[in-house]
Image (tube, rainbow, N blue to C red; front, side, top):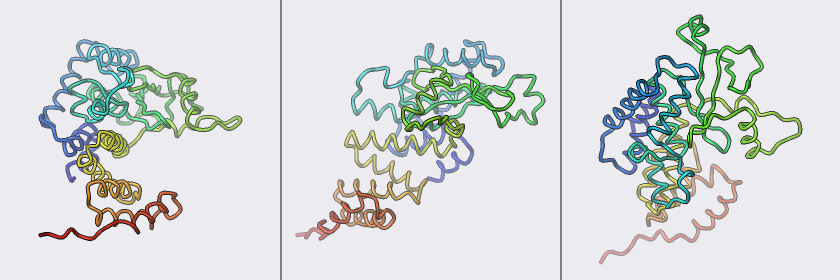
Length: 304
């Protein structure tokens, strides 16, 4: 647990994701081997995609290299997938092997490759969608900023800004590398958020996610895929990590209680159920769990 917290603190997203995956499902390859693979892809991209500086044209060539030459793709492009495949696409070291993943795992891999090449790429927890954002500062502007800092008011390729343009923000779909226009982003936003007359998409929707937020997103996805595949012991390990990273989230305690109940540990399950009931008394699930606790048999088995 200390290793993953240290990686998050150092903003080492790929390392943190690999540590989490290894802890939950195990891995035949060590983490350093996986990270060297990412570095090797970055070196190949520098040569094959002719990347000498992190400008917009070079970034578009990197997208082509990643999704065409390396053949990474999202799960939705492969048709209907089995629970096993969904689980595999949620485990980071297996994503590196099979080059197929979910938006969050593909986003982690792509952003790691891009950062090795000097691009300022980060993940975005956009409503209903997981995106990537690349802030590109013109060389002549970047030279005037202290320590190469990016303006606090970047805009995307469609001109999403109410201030003078200093840097450009490109938003891409990690599934296939599509660059998303302002119009498409707004359409995606209002497909999830109910539109109010004259409402515009807030700039906060496009803010980058922190390293720990991305890791939590990946863990929640992995947890769901493991539960769906009925791999409850591994799913329990994912929840333990989530509780360690989000100790005040009562819903993780509720989910752990459900898994402990499924694994025939009613005494421990009741502790988590009661915690959730106290923290979320108005949640409809609290009433159901309270009734369930009353009828749970916690009598220890008689040993003969």
